[in-house]
Image 1 (cartoon, rainbow, N blue to C red):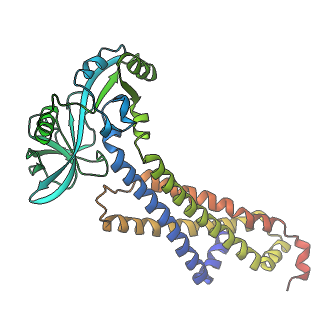
Image 2 (tube, rainbow, N blue to C red; image 1 turned 30 degrees about the vertical axis):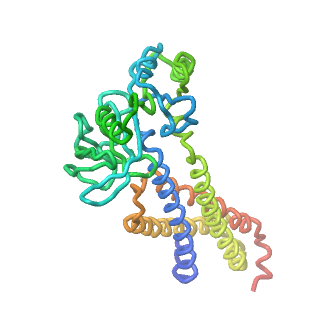
Image 3 (tube, rainbow, N blue to C red; image 1 turned 60 degrees about the vertical axis):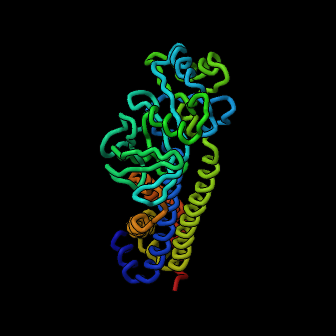
Length: 365
């Protein structure tokens, strides 16, 4: 039956070629939309998602937004004193204009303790900032370049490169808390003190994270504590973006499955007399169904290879400013899902074959 399936595909190259091309475009759209949605969400949430912390604390008025949170520096000590908290450190952030080699670029600046909770992960080259005037950056910069922040005039020397650590889809610079204080003081003169936006914390090994989160919210006045997972999920706009891309990907996926299923159903109907004759000479329904399944598998796998190539070309050619990369697990999962659901859709064709009565071959012409 494999030979029969391959022979038919060779004789109907145009028909199967068009189907393969159509499926390839649909799989390409699924992979591209999934990749872009992952890149966009990662660029919006990477800074929080990649923090080396178990949880984070905002002010009550922040409404789940770190940028809107303002905490007094002594809040760090209050959080650290709560039972179950292992370490705590302040995290400050602001959006600032900047210049790199005379080119204007907007930056999200984070002030963190490199040795404590709240320091970023995803270091790909160099090191984290350890001294005043240093920064590790997720953005289009190189080690050794100098970022001049406006309007503070503070200069940051890039000492490390990060990936997957952006926030608000902006190039993101991680510096020391002392440097962050200098930036804030120069940008907003006259402040009685430099607030932190959040307090990142880790919990002891024997502590229950949810219990510690509740204890912090109860023990420290005018704050709300979150697990890091909850804080990322609650970032304003993330849920709507994920749902929008999810709907687009889902619709594209469903359309692809419907196209494959109906194509092979129509093909089966067109070949019904031939299948009937094969049944009449003793060919089992299972062998005929195998022929259809083999054709579906070949079409989907060839289309997936073409779609993967198109996706790689598209990602290389994109100039979105986002750190777009193809996730291997996403590619494999998408291809497997398309193959499995295509075979299930092909059951419509298989069911039609199973209903063929060999005795009807007498009337076949």
